[in-house]
Image 1 (cartoon, one colour):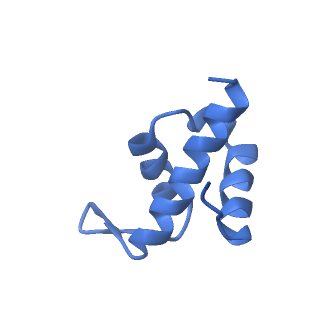
Image 2 (spheres, one colour; image 1 turned 120 degrees about the vertical axis):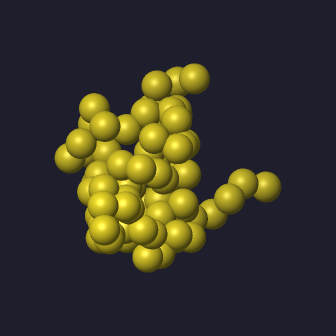
Image 3 (cartoon, rainbow, N blue to C red; image 1 turned 30 degrees about the vertical axis):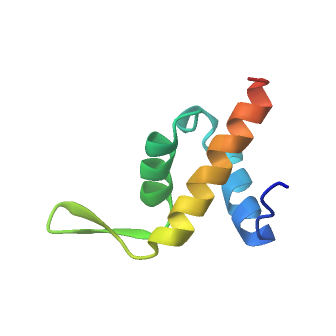
Length: 74
């Protein structure tokens, strides 16, 4: 059985990919960093990125990674 993700997670991930197509790829760690930079899920405190909603950021980055891999056909 596959994973069923919430519509909110899919919508946010696809919107980010549509607005910033060159920033996302098949690497989860890179996608997670971009999600934190481009959304309000992460905040910069004293020069360091802190995550306010870690689980949500991970889910969005994971779906973006899967979406990009499927889009490429690999």
